Length: 356
Ligand SMILES: Cc1cc2nc3c(=O)[nH]c(=O)nc-3n(C[C@H](O)[C@H](O)[C@H](O)COP(=O)(O)O)c2cc1C
Image (tube, rainbow, N blue to C red; front, side, top):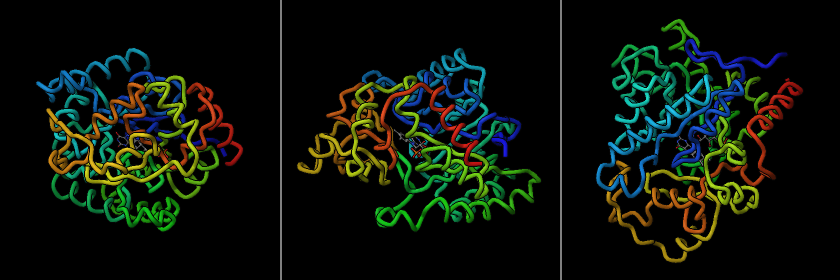
């Protein structure tokens, strides 16, 4: 069997891999363009782009201008397929989505909450809208709402399971039993949930599986279960082109399986990260000093937050990993070395072809 292409609306990627967004400057122009140049889909993460000091005064404007600049830079490096990811939990989500569309981005991915009003923000139906979901139930809810309110359906769905990195769409209790929510269990229910909308809109709604996909065999398994492609993030951190600092990448290479933990994020969702000095300090002290000039998250209450996630993620991005949070997927500890995107994709394809 040949490696299938991934079709999202009228976009056809030669390789059925979407590089997952990694917020606060981990997946920017360098990584996204390198992935797109290999025939997969590169994603720019829109969260945390504004300069942390400058954005104190004009948060929305600084973030908008930074996203514009990043999209333009990425487009100057590739003619391949690009997506922009916008987390619904952001206070400036609508503005970032409109900015990406204005800059000509044709794939908008949105999660970290239910993107129920996404079609109201993006009226242009040449822009493909992909919600991120973690159950058949959430898929049905989003698609029913879009159908009823906007007479529109999704152009693809990203199913993110419990082994993913960053913020997770599962409760702390659910994450104690990730095997109950494996992609193998969730994929059939999401495929079932999209079916009536594929029939009604007479189009394929590709389901893209994410969370713990590490090698070509994992990709083959998801395709054999009915996924049209996979989204992978953790695997792209240890690449030369990944935009984050070297100490961040090295933390993945150095991590042992037991260092990968679930934490509570001020976003209001659990998240997965490497247990480093910052997290140990937080465990000891319970609360670190929080000052917040710009309110980037809707759910974040400064008085109750025990740390500022934006600052912690910026520290890690800059290489000050001891004072920051290092988000990662469950398989981060398997990274052994830093390779180029070209080498990584070639390896994944070799494994995928052998497994098909
Ligand atoms: C460092 C890091 C940052 C992430 N940031 C975001 C983000 O900003 N928005 C988002 O929707 N998902 C984010 N994710 C989730 C990924 O896009 C992806 O769906 C998930 O991690 C896939 O699982 P994998 O890492 O095991 O491949 C992040 C993941 C990591 C590892």
